[in-house]
Image 1 (cartoon, rainbow, N blue to C red):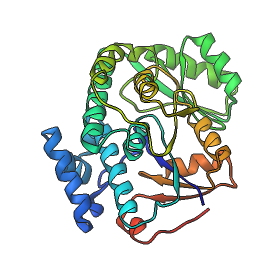
Image 2 (image 1 turned 90 degrees about the vertical axis):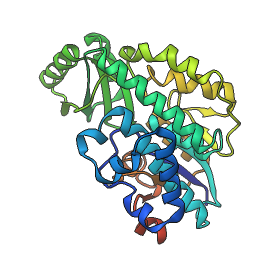
Image 3 (image 1 turned 60 degrees about the vertical axis):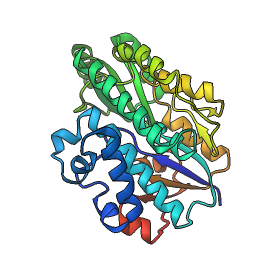
Image 4 (image 1 turned 90 degrees about the horizontal axis):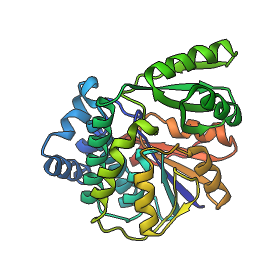
Length: 306
């Protein structure tokens, strides 16, 4: 069996995430305590107790998802469930977690990276008026042409028939109306803080590039697929460039899942919240096996489903 590890992106969060892991595992509690110490604020409180409006903030949500995904990874590793893992990848923010699992940097460094990433993205959101919308049931080529016509950008290629677009709020609103008039099966504005993965995130690009410049990166112990290209990523300097490019690049998540299967992955483990990635995998290839790990019950008694 060749296992591909999948880590969640922003939006796949909920109040209570990680609480039962921390209550039942000294290792999980240790990692959450370390996160609180490094950040200088109680990430564990926001993750375990909320409130929802605070956990949704980019600067809190990203470190929370990173820590939860890393905790699940370490617990599965501790229990010997990952001896067949060969691939690590993540949707947008999840790529930062995947790189930590792959040993490109340690937890402390990964948390610092994701905290700065979230802070800069939140600043870019607050400095612009941006929004995003989901388009369901429309092919990639049609959406590409549609975006060009309405001066917005593709942000996420999540799976067949599920694409997210990004841009200025007025342009996204106009695009949504145009999509409805064009007979798109479903197009809807998302409840997000800004226009992620678009040119409106450009103000975060150079500061993050400078921040990463002095951080040491190692070659990954797993095969990693980059969401900025959908291709394999192994050279530390290429990884550094990809992390920065992710601010303004589309997320080629569908391409990563397809590439992982072509590379020999025959079991996909989602280490995240709400089973979102497992659902996207099924829409990409219904024959691929998958399992989701979020709670202590799931981590304790490994359960493989289809």
